[in-house]
Image 1 (spheres, rainbow, N blue to C red):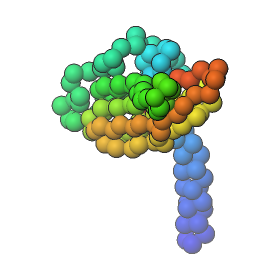
Image 2 (cartoon, helix red, strand yellow):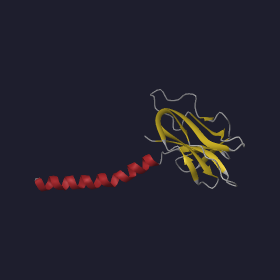
Image 3 (tube, rainbow, N blue to C red):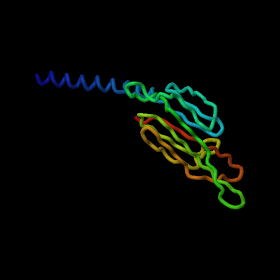
Length: 162
């Protein structure tokens, strides 16, 4: 009897361990993310890796007026994401510093917003880090003063965390 229970236990452990990667892969395939950049505007990267571009605008993109279904389940993408470049004068000579600002509204969903000043090749100069919240999050990068001939871009990112 004891030997039989050990065999059943070992078989169960093997079956569960074989199923775990496929369950994880299914959840991972549902990951959707996106953001905004000075040069390209707004975008959403779908779970299969395809990217949907939106025209850049001051109001950001809005995916749905109705934030959740009747059961309160969050939408697959944020209800709204807005990104912009912030500018401030740093001296009387007219030199300027720049920061990125992002705001994401995603009702009933834990998500992050990140704001970064980057070179156009993707090198990060300043970052807010991920700001994780439920319903609404915002992030502002530290200000950065570009060096001569440095091309900077404000970029914001969002994604779900739960």
